[in-house]
Amino acid sequence: MPVFDDEQDEIAFLERNPERGIAIVLPTVIENHLTSILKAAMRPNTAISNDLFSPRGAFGNFGTKIRLSYMLELIDDALYKDLIIINKIRNEFAHKIIIKNFDQPPINAWIKDMHVYSTLIALRNNRSKEPDDRSVHVLRFILRDELESSRDTFKTCIRVLIHHLTQLEKSVSEVRKSRTSSS
Image (spheres, rainbow, N blue to C red):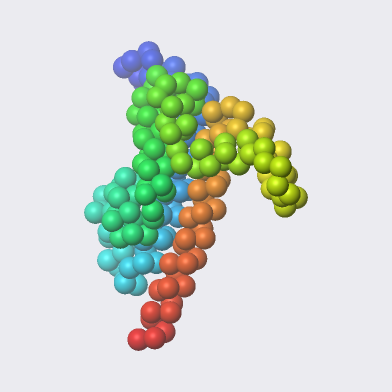
């Protein structure tokens, strides 16, 4: 008895696809940070929190976490849009075997629609004559290589967003601490 009903499924299973792994795992890191931000913003009740954020809980879905974070004003419009795109990319790779790399439509177009992408491109391409900090020149040099392929661009955008979410997580945690210490 064959393990797979469909030859395409068998090929997808046997094929090593690091792009699929990147598209699924890196958004999971973002999702984990978003979960931490939401938990930090909420009343500290582990039992209820674990129930809400379990995979089958009310807030177990990445898309739900994104929308909830936005509605609670924890993230702004640009970050909301970028996170929705990341979730779409993750879902395309996770649920469509035909998607094999970041250069395929609609993946490539979605990456280019991200606010973080346009910010990085603007920084990389800035040709102003004004004196700059040396670190800005170094960053532009690095971005020249990091934005060459769609795969590298996706990874770079994710890195920047993880950094941003880490800072946001610290900020929300500090607000929580100050509220509980003043009560």
